[in-house]
Length: 413
Image (spheres, one colour):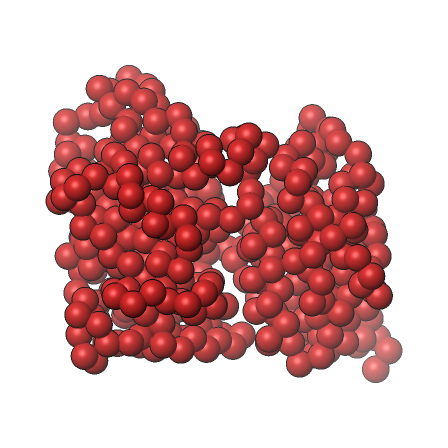
C-alpha cells in the first residue's frame, strides 16, 4: 500500500469513505476523550479503530504498530476487514498544522480545551490555536463540531467552522461559568478513588431525564472528557443511554490519574502542562486525607515558558519534589531551577534530579494515608537523556518502591 502523505488524501483507499470518522483535539484530555468516544461507538459498530498517543487500537486491543501514517492506514484496513465502520483519531496540533485534517477527512470534530503548551513547536499561542482550528475548518456540511463551551477558544473555533456544520456545546463548571444554551451541562461532578460521576442538567439535546454519566477515571477533567465523548457519540447516532453505559464500562487510559497503590495512595499521571498539572493536583488535593506529595519535572528543549507555571501549578501540595522528566541534552538542574521559581515561598520543596530516586524517596517517606502524585510521563516507558532513550516506567518504579516499603514495614513489625 502506498504511503499516505499529510496534506494529500489521494493515497487513501476507496473504502475509507465507508467510515464515520471522529477527530479529537485540544491541549489536555485528548487520549481519555478518544477512549471514551471509542467505547460509546462500539455500541453501534465493532470493532472501532482508535489512534492515540499511546498507539493504535481495535476496540481495546493495542496493535503492534509504529506511530506512522502507514500504521494509521493499516489500523483502518484491519478494522474495515473485520466489519468495523467507526474511527476515532486523537489529533495533535503538530499533525493538524501539517494537514492531517485534509489528508484524513473527518465528519465530527471534538475540542477539549486550549491551554499553555507546545509553544516551542508553534512559536505563538495564535499559531497553536490556528493549528487546532484546522480540524474544524475541514469539517464537511452535515458534520458536527463538539466544543467546550467553558473554554474561550471555542468561540474562535466556532467562527471558522463552515456553515452547515452542526455545533454541540458541553460544559463543566470547574472550567468556568457554563453559558446559557449549552447542550450538555454538568450540574454536579463528584469523584473518589474509584471514579467520577456527572449529573446532567435537562436540555433539549438530552431530554428531561438524562442518565448519570460515570467514568472510571478520576477528577473534574474527566467529567469534561466524558461529556465531550457523549456529544460525539450522539452525533454518530449512538443513543445517550447506550453511550453512557459504554463509557461507564470503559477502562481509564493508562497513566491518566492511575491509582497504582492505596497504602499509601500513589497516582501516576501524564499531566505535563500547567493547566493539566493544576487540575490533577487539585483533584489529588481534594481526595487526600493527609499530606499530598507531588513529584514532577519538565522536558528538556521544550516550551521553556511553561516551567515556572508548572511550579505554580504544584503549589497546593504539602511537599514538592522537583525531578527530571525527559531532559534530553539540556541541563536538568537548570530545568529544575526554572520550575522552582514558580513555587515561590513554598515551605517544603526539594530537588532530586534522579527520577527513580525521587519517586522512591516520596513513596518510602509517605504515611499510609498520604497521596503521592507522580506527574509528567504517565504511560511512557522510556526516559530520554542526552540523545539516548532508556527504559523507564513511572508506574514500575513506583510499584517497586511500594513493595520495598511494604517489605520494610513487614520486617519491622
